[in-house]
Amino acid sequence: MIPTDPNTATAASPAATILSTPAARRLGAVLFFAVLTAAAAQVAIPVPGSPVPITLQTLAVVLCGLALGPRLGAASMGVYLLAGLAGLPVFADLSGGAQVFAGATVGYLLGFAAAPMVMGAVIGSAPRAGTGRIALGVVAAHATIHLLGLAGLVAVAGMSLADAAAMMVWPYAVGDVLKAALAIAVGARLIAWRQRLN
Image 1 (cartoon, rainbow, N blue to C red):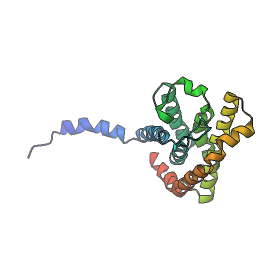
Image 2 (image 1 turned 90 degrees about the horizontal axis):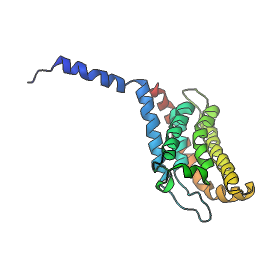
Image 3 (image 1 turned 45 degrees about the vertical axis):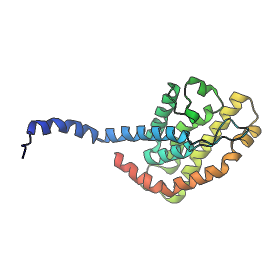
Image 4 (image 1 turned 180 degrees about the horizontal axis):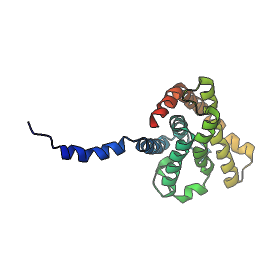
C-alpha cells in the first residue's frame, strides 16, 4: 500500500473547498443556463414571412428564471447576450455580433434578460410556490419577451403594432403554450433546487 502524503491531501483541499462554495455553485449555474440558452437557439424552425424563427430559447429563458430566480437569472441572460455581442455564435443560426442587436430580433434578446426579473416579481421569493403562481410567472415571462420583441420590431422595421403582432406572435402561440406547460410542470422542482445554490 502506498502511504498517503498528508501534505498532498491538504494541498488539494483548498481548491475543492472553493469549488464547493455557494458562490462557485451560483457561478456554475449562471454559466450553465447561458450555455443552455445558446444551445436552445440552434433548435430553430424558420417561419415564412418572419425574421424570427421558432426556437427553444424562450423555454431555456423561463427555466433559467425558475431555477435561478430574478437576480441570477437576469445575470445568466446577461452573460448570454454579452457573449453574442462579443461575436460568439450563440444566437439562432450560429449568429453573433453587434449587428444582431440592430436587427429585428433585438427586442426579443432584451426580453430574455427582463423575463427572469418579471417572473421573480410575480412568483415571489418563497422557497415553495403553488402551481397557480408558477403559471402566472411563466405566462408573465413569455408576455415580457413578446412585448419587448414587438417593440423592437416596430422600432427597427417601422411596422404597425397590429402588423407586428400578426407576424411575430400568433404563429408562435402553439409552441409557446407547449413550452409554458413544460415549464409549469417542472417549475416547483426548479424553485426547490434553487435553494441549494445558497
